Image 1 (tube, helix red, strand yellow):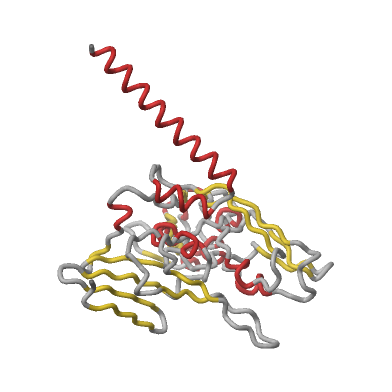
Image 2 (cartoon, rainbow, N blue to C red):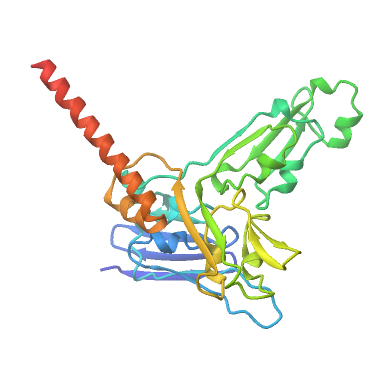
Amino acid sequence: MPLKELKTDTENTLTIERILHTKRYSLTLDKTLCVGCEICQITCPREAIEIKKTPKKNGEKAQRPIFDVSEQKCSYCGMCEPICPFSALEVRVDGQRMVPVLEKESFPKLIREIEVDPTKCDIDCIDCQEVCPLNLISVKILAPGGKEISPEEARSMPNKENLKVKVNIEKNLSPCCRLCELKCPKGAIHVRKIMHGILRINLEKCPDGCQDCLDVCPIPGALYLDESDRKVHTNETFCVFCGTCTIVCPVKEALVLDRRTIHHTPVSSGAWNKALEKLTSAKEYSKEAKTKALTKAKKMAEKRLLLKEAS
């Protein structure tokens, strides 16, 4: 039995703690990073996480859903942390960052594949920095010797070939929406999306004048208002398939989200199989499970062959 269970809610963080005789567990949500999506709630094996729809007042824009977690139900397994596309959650044990399911290798990490070739960048271009909706990109211009200079100073210098561009991206926080890649005029950035799928709006069920999904979407351009029919439409090129839009949608099945693939590190476990089954379509889950079974069978066959050759 825990000695104490605590819950601390501040403007920017929500923290729950479980204090035992020999251990102290904590789970912290960074509200500045959380977009109120459904992924942690779907993944949680104890149903400890609840994503609450924020009440909407007449005439106001829809607000993003609110994350809540039960300090009694949470087991501090850590499944919610590595699966969060916005890296808004953090698990600690005795004050040290540690995710039990990762330590046990029973859960994968999301792969955030972002590559930058700064040699292709124009000296005075900061398009990627300006387009990033989460302010995760900073572009610096370095003069010989490593001194940082402004774009104005760079443009006035006679020997621009001696200048270097350094693009810093906080990859661990990126949901890999690809806005920076497609905005870059020189093709200097390559991004592989973490999740692929389908997001469809049933225009017949979509209420006239409703823009709730557009109001809460964290990625500009993933949803957009078509002036011809005054309806919201989808652009899956930028969508990160977080599901925030489906939570605030006032009409059931007006928005349909179907995750097909999740780019993650290799893992084979019952915990991940259950999470994957809930997060993706049945077809994708079956496909990955079949691939794992074939890989396991191949390894067993190779092992038997080696044993036979050794004997």
